[in-house]
Amino acid sequence: MLLVALNNYFFNPSIMQVAMEITARHCRREMEDYGTCVASNPSSWQQQCHDLKLKVAQCTSSHPAIQKIRSDCAGQFTEFERCLREHQAAVGSCSTHVTRFLACAETVDLTGVGGAVPQPT
Image (cartoon, rainbow, N blue to C red; front, side, top):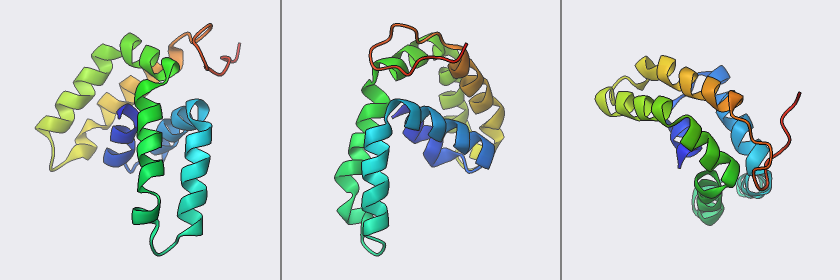
């Protein structure tokens, strides 16, 4: 649910792009299946692709690499969640918090984490 929350709350293209890149890096198959379903069902994708959307959410919350990011960046994510709760009517005011979380996520060493894509050196 971590990246789904990011995707649902932020529409800033650069923030959204980073969140989607993290999701795509670790949940590529689920994202591709969902994207194919959406493209194939332009008028009914919300109903037709609901189960695939849930699979993306499940992957983003259970993938070992994403769990490590969430663990290593727990403080930043907690601050982000708190900001969202406190500013529900103006979630854009939380962009600094999400930027800190995403910056942390990019520095997490995923070497040896099951299913993780190797980090560039």
